[in-house]
Length: 98
Image (cartoon, rainbow, N blue to C red; front, side, top):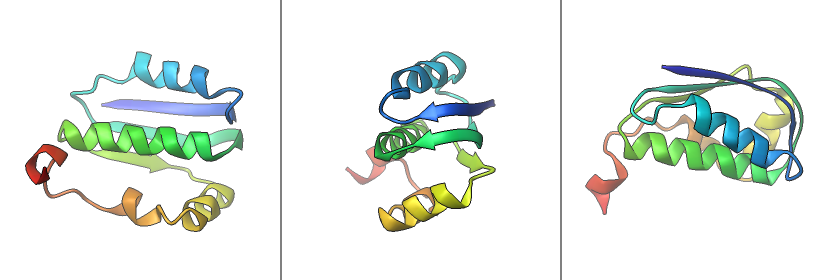
């Protein structure tokens, strides 16, 4: 299992570094837990990256979990109407439904 703690800038200005960190530390064939407690700044590009991670986890039949989410991040997920996407437990992989 990969447990990755993110910190600092997760906005468009730092998203490439965040993506590279996740890519470096996550074996796609293992579960992924992302600790969001250290994030100081984020924007929709970060939410898009989290959605991409969740999609990859589903495609590889692996659990995906976000922990220590701030109220600000939760509010943005709610505003973007993607809260259900992150809380849903996939019963099938994406390839099973295509």
